[in-house]
Structure formats: structure tokens, C-alpha cells
Image 1: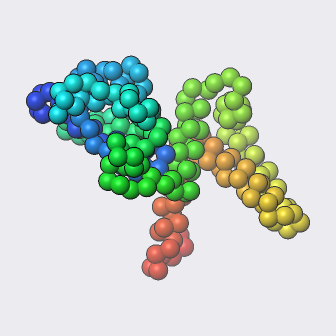
Image 2 (image 1 turned 30 degrees about the vertical axis):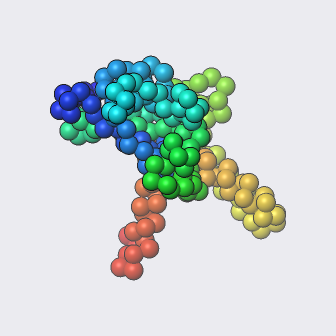
Image 3 (image 1 turned 180 degrees about the vertical axis):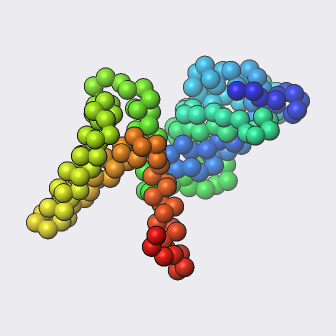
Length: 204
């Protein structure tokens, strides 16, 4: 990853985003040393312009930022840090530096879940059920989607609401595994539904 530290006099701005909720938590700055420490420790480390020193977020409060992903923008002079916050991000005690509540959106978890499933597909850790699905291939994954769909229908007709939710969750999980195996994203399903919601939409 090429980062142009020189453009900003040795510093680049870092936008910090919650990897789960997609909410922006804060803005900080890194020099090359802070960047390298962040990668090494997996905890976001900044350069303080006021104190002119390196500081790791949470080193005194314990409210650190666990690094999930770090990427540079198209101009190579701004970083996006996707993190899991451990405690409030702002020194004032609020979730974000803008005083917002970092409340996770339920539907946003589906994207997070697919990110996790895709990580399983890449790493294929032994003993993982998700790994076993990818090992058996697309036919088995598709079969599981069909089985879970049938179980959901059976519970909807003869079961309890609790069982419908349970089986529906199984169905949704296996559908996301199928999408991942096909190189598709759950967001594409959302885009399709949004398009259908348009009054001018007509069936293909």
C-alpha cells in the first residue's frame, strides 16, 4: 500500500469507521511510525499534532480501537481504518467524536456476517462448519439452502413463531454462504429489492 506522507508534511488524516455499524467514529492523523505500529499491534495508533508524539488510542483509558482493515484512498493521502471499538471512542465518553450514539443497525449485520463468511472461504480453518460447506462445493451449499427453506415452510405452517425465526435464520445464513460461493454479495439482493420498490419497476 503506497501512502503519500509527504503531501501533508509527514502526516495523513485517518477516518475511523466502525467495521460493524459503518458509523464514522473519529478523525485522527498518522505519520509513518504510527501507521507501522498500527499494523504491528492491530490497535489503532495516531500521531498527536498538539502533543507532537505517538499515542495509541486507549493506552490510558482502555478504550482502544481494534483494527479490522486499513486502506488508502485514490489519492494515496487519506486512510480509512475499519475498527471494532472497545468502549467509547471520544475522550468525552461518547461513542463518536460528534456525540452520536453508535447503535448497530440490525440489517447492517448481514454485511458483517458475509465478510466473516468470506474470510472463512479464504482461510478455510479446520473444524469450521462454514469451511465444510465450501469444501463440499456449490451443489451441497445449494442443497442446504433448499433444505432450510423447506424447514422454514414447515415451521411456518405447523410450528411456533420461535421456530420460524430459528429456521429462517438458518435459511438466511446458508443463502449468504451460497452468495459468497457464487461471488455475489447480500447487498446485491438489497439493491434488487430497492429497484423493485420503485413505482416504475416492471418484472423482467
